[in-house]
Image 1: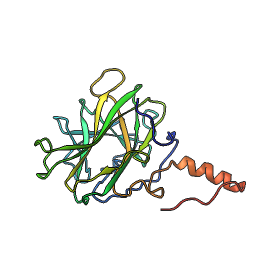
Image 2: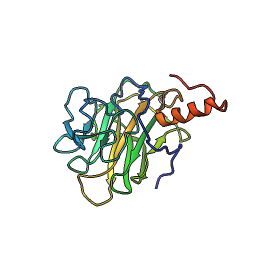
Image 3: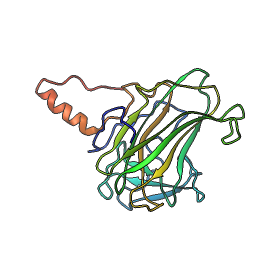
Image 4: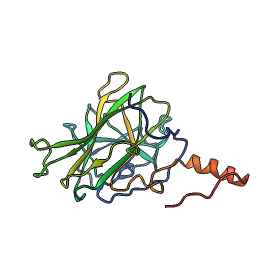
Length: 230
């Protein structure tokens, strides 16, 4: 099990939804928006306008969940994704325009569905041809993360060895490794994803609304500072 690099937070309510990298979009899966509570999931094609994400699934389906359905609260915003839609697969985005020698960072939230689920984060330089799998790809980062279904784990690149861009397109992907129950259509919730230069600025990392409520209560007692703004 990969050690968490930052505090694990319970998803107790809506989150502050922010995204620091214009090239990496829809990290909290808020687009397209569907009616909360109408179903436990809604499937979208990876060609749906605004969704941003692509999938390695052969049916090209991406599964979104609404906040608090079946008792699972979103970590950020009102929606989140499940890696295993109809089959074991990966969700990814290709990000271009990051200059050579730039330090790139990431953060994301992960949670199991039926028990302990494991996924892998891969960051791959696509080489001079900017094509995945063509032979000149270079893996800049790869690590597995495991979480159960009682709380979201939140992870960042802070404290890790620097991830240095080579000037080519980068593929940022979440790969389903295993899921409790063994059902290929179940497992690995993802939310609050961001990737790029400067995305771990403290003013931009999502923090649960419950944290602010608790902080406000402490402020009333004179023991908590001002609320951080972005």
